Image 1 (cartoon, one colour):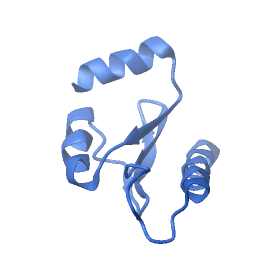
Image 2 (cartoon, one colour):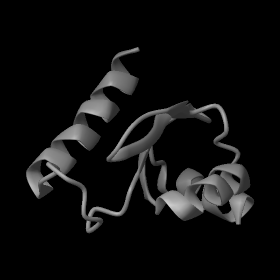
Image 3 (spheres, helix red, strand yellow):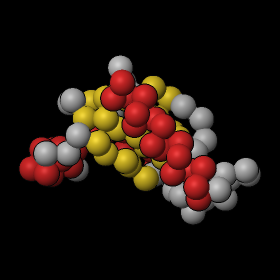
Length: 88
């Protein structure tokens, strides 16, 4: 799974990737994609950082019921994380 994921990222020339994963599956996804070095964050963002020169934000599923998290605040937090990664 990991090599195929990174091949697609490379083919697309992607510089930003948002991964939607559940808290229960994130550990497996993180390991398979080699993203163990991403900074661990709190809901609704699981982790964020840079890998292979790509800004990565991993999130809980946006439909997950999280107290106080609206659709707009969810999107805003993802965008803020991407801007933060790209500014460093």
